[in-house]
Length: 93
Image (cartoon, rainbow, N blue to C red; front, side, top):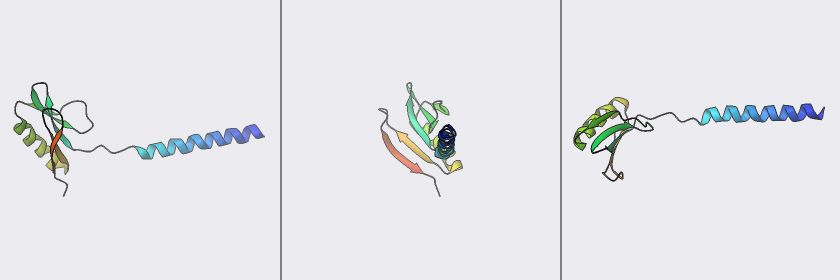
């Protein structure tokens, strides 16, 4: 009898943990980062490892990031050559 109640408690705890962990998942954003990439500049979606596009000039990368951010009402985060953030532009209406 005690074994069933312990087993039942363990099962309930596992269900609670499983159900709560599903609600913790964050939705991905469409924020676009302009980052140094090799000797050039790249646009990368926040959370992605792969780049969206590569550009010789930072200004060209910024323009590309702005187009994407406007479409998805997201932000453009512009980084310096050392990786620090230098500016953020929001297109969230």
